[in-house]
Image 1 (cartoon, rainbow, N blue to C red):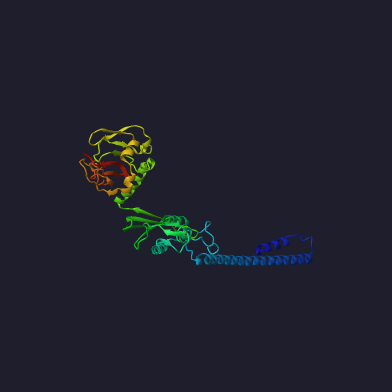
Image 2: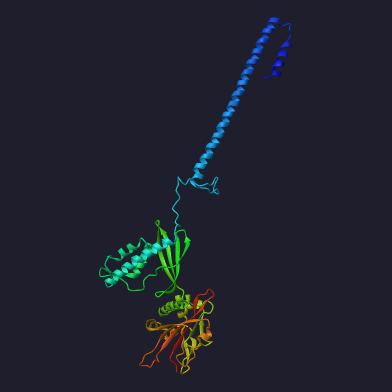
Length: 405
Protein backbone atom coordinates (compact mmCIF):
# COMPACT_ATOMS: atom_id res chain seq x y z
CA UNK A 1 0.00 0.00 0.00
CA UNK A 2 1.36 3.43 -0.85
CA UNK A 3 1.77 6.39 1.51
CA UNK A 4 -1.01 8.16 -0.32
CA UNK A 5 -3.45 5.33 0.42
CA UNK A 6 -2.44 5.24 4.07
CA UNK A 7 -3.05 8.99 4.51
CA UNK A 8 -6.44 8.69 2.87
CA UNK A 9 -7.46 5.94 5.28
CA UNK A 10 -6.26 7.93 8.29
CA UNK A 11 -8.20 10.92 7.10
CA UNK A 12 -11.34 8.82 6.72
CA UNK A 13 -10.93 7.57 10.30
CA UNK A 14 -10.64 11.08 11.57
CA UNK A 15 -13.78 12.04 9.71
CA UNK A 16 -15.90 9.35 11.43
CA UNK A 17 -18.61 10.88 13.68
CA UNK A 18 -17.07 11.50 17.09
CA UNK A 19 -20.28 11.06 19.01
CA UNK A 20 -20.37 7.33 18.43
CA UNK A 21 -17.09 6.48 20.25
CA UNK A 22 -15.19 7.99 23.12
CA UNK A 23 -11.63 9.12 22.78
CA UNK A 24 -10.13 5.92 24.17
CA UNK A 25 -12.09 3.69 21.83
CA UNK A 26 -11.18 5.79 18.84
CA UNK A 27 -7.49 5.52 19.72
CA UNK A 28 -7.71 1.74 20.04
CA UNK A 29 -9.47 1.36 16.74
CA UNK A 30 -6.96 3.69 15.10
CA UNK A 31 -4.05 1.64 16.42
CA UNK A 32 -5.62 -1.61 15.25
CA UNK A 33 -6.20 -0.25 11.78
CA UNK A 34 -2.64 1.02 11.60
CA UNK A 35 -1.37 -2.49 12.49
CA UNK A 36 -3.55 -4.00 9.81
CA UNK A 37 -2.26 -1.55 7.21
CA UNK A 38 1.35 -2.21 8.19
CA UNK A 39 0.80 -5.99 8.08
CA UNK A 40 -0.78 -5.68 4.61
CA UNK A 41 2.13 -3.60 3.30
CA UNK A 42 4.64 -6.17 4.61
CA UNK A 43 2.80 -9.00 2.82
CA UNK A 44 2.70 -6.97 -0.42
CA UNK A 45 6.44 -6.29 -0.22
CA UNK A 46 7.15 -10.01 0.29
CA UNK A 47 4.97 -10.89 -2.68
CA UNK A 48 6.83 -8.41 -4.89
CA UNK A 49 10.18 -9.83 -3.77
CA UNK A 50 9.01 -13.38 -4.58
CA UNK A 51 7.77 -12.25 -7.99
CA UNK A 52 11.12 -10.64 -8.75
CA UNK A 53 13.00 -13.74 -7.60
CA UNK A 54 10.76 -15.99 -9.70
CA UNK A 55 11.22 -13.78 -12.77
CA UNK A 56 15.00 -13.85 -12.32
CA UNK A 57 14.97 -17.60 -11.89
CA UNK A 58 12.84 -18.04 -15.03
CA UNK A 59 15.25 -15.88 -17.00
CA UNK A 60 18.19 -17.98 -15.86
CA UNK A 61 16.39 -21.19 -16.82
CA UNK A 62 15.43 -19.83 -20.27
CA UNK A 63 18.99 -18.68 -20.91
CA UNK A 64 20.32 -22.10 -19.85
CA UNK A 65 17.95 -23.86 -22.23
CA UNK A 66 19.08 -21.65 -25.12
CA UNK A 67 22.72 -22.44 -24.36
CA UNK A 68 21.93 -26.17 -24.08
CA UNK A 69 20.10 -26.44 -27.40
CA UNK A 70 22.67 -24.29 -29.17
CA UNK A 71 25.55 -26.54 -28.16
CA UNK A 72 23.47 -29.64 -28.88
CA UNK A 73 23.02 -28.47 -32.49
CA UNK A 74 26.69 -27.64 -32.78
CA UNK A 75 27.70 -31.03 -31.43
CA UNK A 76 25.18 -33.01 -33.46
CA UNK A 77 25.34 -31.10 -36.73
CA UNK A 78 28.40 -28.99 -37.32
CA UNK A 79 30.88 -31.19 -35.46
CA UNK A 80 29.81 -34.13 -37.65
CA UNK A 81 31.35 -32.36 -40.61
CA UNK A 82 28.06 -31.29 -42.24
CA UNK A 83 28.56 -27.64 -43.07
CA UNK A 84 25.98 -27.62 -45.87
CA UNK A 85 23.24 -25.18 -44.83
CA UNK A 86 21.05 -25.81 -47.88
CA UNK A 87 19.07 -28.61 -46.23
CA UNK A 88 18.39 -26.99 -42.82
CA UNK A 89 14.81 -26.79 -41.68
CA UNK A 90 11.77 -29.06 -41.85
CA UNK A 91 13.15 -31.11 -44.75
CA UNK A 92 16.46 -31.86 -43.12
CA UNK A 93 17.39 -35.54 -43.47
CA UNK A 94 17.94 -38.06 -40.65
CA UNK A 95 21.05 -38.19 -38.53
CA UNK A 96 23.69 -39.94 -40.65
CA UNK A 97 25.23 -41.54 -37.57
CA UNK A 98 21.97 -43.37 -36.90
CA UNK A 99 21.01 -44.18 -40.52
CA UNK A 100 24.12 -44.81 -42.67
CA UNK A 101 23.50 -43.97 -46.37
CA UNK A 102 23.04 -46.78 -48.90
CA UNK A 103 26.25 -47.58 -50.76
CA UNK A 104 26.58 -45.39 -53.83
CA UNK A 105 26.49 -47.66 -56.91
CA UNK A 106 28.01 -44.94 -59.10
CA UNK A 107 31.45 -45.44 -57.58
CA UNK A 108 33.05 -46.61 -60.82
CA UNK A 109 36.28 -45.37 -62.33
CA UNK A 110 39.05 -46.17 -64.79
CA UNK A 111 40.96 -48.24 -62.23
CA UNK A 112 37.95 -50.51 -61.70
CA UNK A 113 37.49 -50.88 -65.45
CA UNK A 114 41.13 -51.84 -65.93
CA UNK A 115 41.01 -54.29 -63.03
CA UNK A 116 37.98 -56.16 -64.44
CA UNK A 117 39.14 -56.21 -68.06
CA UNK A 118 42.59 -57.47 -67.00
CA UNK A 119 41.03 -60.29 -64.96
CA UNK A 120 38.79 -61.22 -67.90
CA UNK A 121 41.75 -61.28 -70.30
CA UNK A 122 43.90 -63.34 -67.92
CA UNK A 123 41.14 -65.92 -67.40
CA UNK A 124 40.51 -66.32 -71.11
CA UNK A 125 44.18 -66.38 -72.11
CA UNK A 126 45.01 -69.02 -69.50
CA UNK A 127 42.41 -71.31 -71.07
CA UNK A 128 43.67 -70.51 -74.58
CA UNK A 129 47.26 -71.37 -73.55
CA UNK A 130 46.11 -74.58 -71.92
CA UNK A 131 44.20 -75.59 -75.06
CA UNK A 132 47.20 -74.73 -77.23
CA UNK A 133 49.33 -77.24 -75.35
CA UNK A 134 46.68 -79.99 -75.47
CA UNK A 135 45.40 -79.96 -79.06
CA UNK A 136 42.57 -77.54 -78.24
CA UNK A 137 41.51 -79.58 -75.21
CA UNK A 138 40.77 -77.99 -71.83
CA UNK A 139 41.96 -80.24 -68.99
CA UNK A 140 41.37 -77.99 -65.96
CA UNK A 141 37.58 -78.01 -66.36
CA UNK A 142 35.27 -80.95 -66.95
CA UNK A 143 32.42 -79.03 -68.60
CA UNK A 144 31.38 -75.75 -70.17
CA UNK A 145 29.28 -75.07 -67.07
CA UNK A 146 32.42 -75.11 -64.92
CA UNK A 147 34.20 -72.73 -67.27
CA UNK A 148 31.18 -70.41 -67.21
CA UNK A 149 31.22 -70.45 -63.41
CA UNK A 150 34.88 -69.39 -63.41
CA UNK A 151 33.95 -66.25 -65.38
CA UNK A 152 31.00 -65.18 -63.20
CA UNK A 153 33.16 -63.25 -60.76
CA UNK A 154 34.13 -60.92 -63.60
CA UNK A 155 31.30 -61.23 -66.15
CA UNK A 156 27.54 -61.21 -65.72
CA UNK A 157 25.92 -64.63 -65.97
CA UNK A 158 24.41 -63.80 -69.37
CA UNK A 159 27.68 -62.55 -70.85
CA UNK A 160 29.65 -65.45 -69.36
CA UNK A 161 27.21 -67.89 -70.98
CA UNK A 162 27.52 -66.21 -74.38
CA UNK A 163 31.35 -66.20 -74.23
CA UNK A 164 31.50 -69.88 -73.27
CA UNK A 165 29.01 -70.85 -76.00
CA UNK A 166 30.97 -68.84 -78.55
CA UNK A 167 34.47 -70.13 -77.73
CA UNK A 168 34.08 -73.58 -76.19
CA UNK A 169 32.46 -76.88 -77.11
CA UNK A 170 31.96 -80.28 -75.48
CA UNK A 171 32.80 -83.52 -77.27
CA UNK A 172 33.08 -87.08 -75.96
CA UNK A 173 32.96 -85.88 -72.37
CA UNK A 174 35.74 -83.34 -72.86
CA UNK A 175 35.85 -79.57 -73.36
CA UNK A 176 37.60 -78.02 -76.34
CA UNK A 177 38.28 -74.45 -77.38
CA UNK A 178 36.91 -73.38 -80.76
CA UNK A 179 39.76 -72.02 -82.93
CA UNK A 180 38.66 -68.51 -83.93
CA UNK A 181 39.50 -64.86 -83.46
CA UNK A 182 39.55 -64.08 -79.75
CA UNK A 183 37.74 -61.34 -77.84
CA UNK A 184 38.69 -57.68 -78.14
CA UNK A 185 40.78 -56.49 -75.19
CA UNK A 186 41.44 -53.00 -73.91
CA UNK A 187 44.90 -51.91 -75.00
CA UNK A 188 47.38 -50.24 -72.68
CA UNK A 189 46.27 -46.86 -73.98
CA UNK A 190 43.86 -44.12 -72.98
CA UNK A 191 40.19 -44.93 -72.86
CA UNK A 192 37.02 -43.04 -71.98
CA UNK A 193 34.67 -43.84 -69.08
CA UNK A 194 31.07 -42.71 -69.56
CA UNK A 195 28.13 -42.99 -67.17
CA UNK A 196 24.94 -44.33 -68.75
CA UNK A 197 22.97 -44.83 -65.52
CA UNK A 198 23.89 -45.21 -61.85
CA UNK A 199 24.36 -48.95 -62.36
CA UNK A 200 25.65 -48.86 -65.94
CA UNK A 201 28.93 -47.46 -67.28
CA UNK A 202 30.68 -47.90 -70.62
CA UNK A 203 34.36 -47.76 -71.47
CA UNK A 204 35.30 -46.94 -75.07
CA UNK A 205 38.65 -47.13 -76.80
CA UNK A 206 39.52 -46.48 -80.45
CA UNK A 207 41.99 -49.07 -81.68
CA UNK A 208 44.04 -50.05 -84.71
CA UNK A 209 44.86 -53.75 -84.57
CA UNK A 210 45.65 -56.51 -87.05
CA UNK A 211 42.70 -58.48 -85.72
CA UNK A 212 39.94 -55.88 -85.90
CA UNK A 213 41.52 -53.07 -87.91
CA UNK A 214 40.41 -49.54 -87.12
CA UNK A 215 37.65 -50.14 -84.62
CA UNK A 216 35.88 -48.74 -81.57
CA UNK A 217 35.79 -51.23 -78.69
CA UNK A 218 33.04 -50.66 -76.13
CA UNK A 219 32.93 -52.45 -72.77
CA UNK A 220 29.69 -52.34 -70.77
CA UNK A 221 29.78 -52.59 -66.96
CA UNK A 222 26.73 -53.33 -64.78
CA UNK A 223 26.34 -53.16 -61.00
CA UNK A 224 24.90 -56.54 -59.96
CA UNK A 225 24.56 -57.83 -56.37
CA UNK A 226 26.97 -55.21 -54.98
CA UNK A 227 29.61 -55.94 -57.64
CA UNK A 228 30.67 -54.32 -60.90
CA UNK A 229 30.75 -56.87 -63.73
CA UNK A 230 31.38 -56.79 -67.48
CA UNK A 231 28.00 -57.26 -69.18
CA UNK A 232 28.82 -56.87 -72.89
CA UNK A 233 31.59 -56.01 -75.35
CA UNK A 234 30.88 -54.37 -78.71
CA UNK A 235 33.20 -53.83 -81.67
CA UNK A 236 32.33 -51.12 -84.17
CA UNK A 237 34.48 -50.94 -87.28
CA UNK A 238 35.50 -47.36 -88.06
CA UNK A 239 37.06 -48.13 -91.43
CA UNK A 240 34.40 -47.30 -94.04
CA UNK A 241 35.68 -49.97 -96.39
CA UNK A 242 35.30 -52.55 -93.68
CA UNK A 243 31.86 -51.22 -92.80
CA UNK A 244 30.56 -51.68 -96.34
CA UNK A 245 32.35 -55.05 -96.61
CA UNK A 246 30.58 -56.32 -93.48
CA UNK A 247 27.26 -54.89 -94.65
CA UNK A 248 27.69 -56.49 -98.06
CA UNK A 249 28.31 -59.87 -96.46
CA UNK A 250 25.04 -59.59 -94.52
CA UNK A 251 23.17 -58.55 -97.66
CA UNK A 252 24.55 -61.47 -99.68
CA UNK A 253 23.48 -63.86 -96.93
CA UNK A 254 19.97 -62.37 -97.00
CA UNK A 255 19.83 -62.75 -100.79
CA UNK A 256 20.97 -66.34 -100.50
CA UNK A 257 18.14 -67.00 -98.02
CA UNK A 258 15.70 -64.94 -100.14
CA UNK A 259 14.94 -62.93 -96.98
CA UNK A 260 13.53 -59.76 -98.52
CA UNK A 261 12.34 -58.37 -95.18
CA UNK A 262 15.92 -58.18 -93.88
CA UNK A 263 17.17 -57.00 -97.25
CA UNK A 264 14.79 -54.04 -97.11
CA UNK A 265 16.55 -52.78 -93.96
CA UNK A 266 19.68 -52.06 -96.00
CA UNK A 267 17.97 -50.23 -98.89
CA UNK A 268 18.33 -46.45 -99.32
CA UNK A 269 15.09 -44.83 -98.18
CA UNK A 270 15.13 -42.11 -100.88
CA UNK A 271 16.85 -43.68 -103.89
CA UNK A 272 15.44 -47.18 -103.57
CA UNK A 273 17.20 -50.21 -105.07
CA UNK A 274 18.26 -50.43 -108.72
CA UNK A 275 18.88 -53.74 -110.54
CA UNK A 276 21.11 -54.03 -113.59
CA UNK A 277 22.15 -57.33 -115.31
CA UNK A 278 25.30 -55.66 -116.72
CA UNK A 279 27.89 -53.14 -115.51
CA UNK A 280 26.61 -50.54 -117.94
CA UNK A 281 23.72 -49.14 -115.94
CA UNK A 282 20.82 -47.89 -118.06
CA UNK A 283 18.73 -44.92 -117.05
CA UNK A 284 15.72 -47.18 -117.66
CA UNK A 285 16.97 -49.80 -115.18
CA UNK A 286 14.37 -51.31 -112.86
CA UNK A 287 14.18 -49.58 -109.49
CA UNK A 288 12.11 -50.65 -106.47
CA UNK A 289 11.49 -48.40 -103.49
CA UNK A 290 12.42 -49.45 -99.97
CA UNK A 291 8.82 -50.18 -98.93
CA UNK A 292 8.41 -52.54 -101.92
CA UNK A 293 11.39 -54.76 -101.15
CA UNK A 294 9.89 -56.90 -98.38
CA UNK A 295 7.20 -58.25 -100.79
CA UNK A 296 9.46 -58.22 -103.83
CA UNK A 297 9.41 -61.95 -104.54
CA UNK A 298 5.63 -62.08 -104.25
CA UNK A 299 5.33 -59.72 -107.21
CA UNK A 300 4.05 -61.70 -110.23
CA UNK A 301 4.57 -58.92 -112.77
CA UNK A 302 7.19 -59.24 -115.53
CA UNK A 303 9.69 -56.41 -115.87
CA UNK A 304 12.09 -55.40 -118.61
CA UNK A 305 15.44 -55.59 -116.82
CA UNK A 306 17.56 -54.89 -119.94
CA UNK A 307 18.75 -56.78 -123.01
CA UNK A 308 20.87 -59.87 -123.35
CA UNK A 309 24.36 -59.26 -124.61
CA UNK A 310 24.98 -60.82 -128.01
CA UNK A 311 21.46 -61.32 -129.36
CA UNK A 312 19.79 -58.25 -127.87
CA UNK A 313 16.74 -60.13 -126.69
CA UNK A 314 14.78 -58.42 -123.93
CA UNK A 315 15.28 -59.70 -120.41
CA UNK A 316 11.65 -59.97 -119.35
CA UNK A 317 11.33 -61.79 -116.03
CA UNK A 318 9.41 -61.72 -112.76
CA UNK A 319 11.40 -60.73 -109.70
CA UNK A 320 11.64 -64.39 -108.61
CA UNK A 321 12.92 -65.40 -112.04
CA UNK A 322 15.46 -62.59 -112.07
CA UNK A 323 16.83 -63.59 -108.64
CA UNK A 324 17.11 -67.21 -109.74
CA UNK A 325 18.98 -66.34 -112.96
CA UNK A 326 21.19 -63.42 -111.92
CA UNK A 327 21.39 -63.41 -108.11
CA UNK A 328 22.19 -66.93 -107.00
CA UNK A 329 24.41 -65.90 -104.09
CA UNK A 330 25.55 -69.24 -102.66
CA UNK A 331 28.52 -69.79 -104.98
CA UNK A 332 29.67 -66.19 -104.51
CA UNK A 333 29.59 -66.53 -100.74
CA UNK A 334 31.52 -69.79 -100.93
CA UNK A 335 34.20 -69.05 -103.50
CA UNK A 336 33.93 -65.40 -104.47
CA UNK A 337 36.82 -62.96 -104.19
CA UNK A 338 35.62 -59.89 -102.27
CA UNK A 339 36.86 -56.57 -103.67
CA UNK A 340 36.02 -53.27 -101.99
CA UNK A 341 36.03 -50.13 -104.13
CA UNK A 342 38.16 -51.89 -106.74
CA UNK A 343 36.06 -51.82 -109.90
CA UNK A 344 37.66 -53.05 -113.10
CA UNK A 345 36.52 -53.23 -116.71
CA UNK A 346 37.06 -56.86 -117.65
CA UNK A 347 35.06 -57.04 -120.86
CA UNK A 348 33.93 -54.90 -123.73
CA UNK A 349 31.03 -53.31 -121.87
CA UNK A 350 31.73 -49.98 -120.21
CA UNK A 351 31.45 -49.97 -116.44
CA UNK A 352 29.61 -46.72 -115.67
CA UNK A 353 28.65 -47.41 -112.02
CA UNK A 354 30.74 -44.50 -110.72
CA UNK A 355 29.19 -42.20 -113.32
CA UNK A 356 25.68 -43.03 -112.12
CA UNK A 357 26.66 -43.15 -108.43
CA UNK A 358 29.68 -40.81 -108.06
CA UNK A 359 29.59 -40.78 -104.23
CA UNK A 360 29.33 -44.54 -103.93
CA UNK A 361 31.40 -47.38 -102.52
CA UNK A 362 31.22 -50.81 -104.11
CA UNK A 363 31.71 -54.37 -102.92
CA UNK A 364 32.25 -56.91 -105.69
CA UNK A 365 31.91 -60.68 -105.27
CA UNK A 366 34.01 -61.99 -108.16
CA UNK A 367 34.33 -65.52 -109.56
CA UNK A 368 37.31 -65.71 -111.91
CA UNK A 369 36.02 -68.47 -114.15
CA UNK A 370 37.58 -71.78 -115.05
CA UNK A 371 40.64 -72.54 -117.15
CA UNK A 372 38.76 -75.05 -119.27
CA UNK A 373 36.44 -72.26 -120.34
CA UNK A 374 39.28 -69.75 -120.69
CA UNK A 375 37.66 -67.59 -118.02
CA UNK A 376 34.58 -66.93 -120.13
CA UNK A 377 32.41 -68.19 -117.28
CA UNK A 378 33.57 -65.43 -114.95
CA UNK A 379 30.81 -63.73 -112.95
CA UNK A 380 30.34 -60.85 -110.54
CA UNK A 381 27.69 -59.45 -108.26
CA UNK A 382 28.44 -55.84 -107.36
CA UNK A 383 26.70 -54.16 -104.43
CA UNK A 384 26.64 -50.36 -104.64
CA UNK A 385 26.32 -48.20 -101.50
CA UNK A 386 25.68 -44.51 -100.89
CA UNK A 387 25.28 -42.65 -97.61
CA UNK A 388 21.78 -41.64 -96.56
CA UNK A 389 20.80 -38.41 -94.78
CA UNK A 390 22.09 -39.90 -91.50
CA UNK A 391 25.51 -40.72 -92.93
CA UNK A 392 24.86 -44.48 -93.01
CA UNK A 393 25.94 -46.53 -95.99
CA UNK A 394 22.80 -47.87 -97.70
CA UNK A 395 22.30 -50.16 -100.68
CA UNK A 396 21.32 -48.32 -103.88
CA UNK A 397 22.07 -50.89 -106.60
CA UNK A 398 22.79 -54.53 -107.31
CA UNK A 399 24.72 -54.91 -110.58
CA UNK A 400 25.82 -58.05 -112.39
CA UNK A 401 28.90 -58.51 -114.52
CA UNK A 402 30.03 -61.37 -116.70
CA UNK A 403 31.75 -62.33 -119.90
CA UNK A 404 30.31 -60.48 -122.90
CA UNK A 405 30.78 -60.77 -126.65
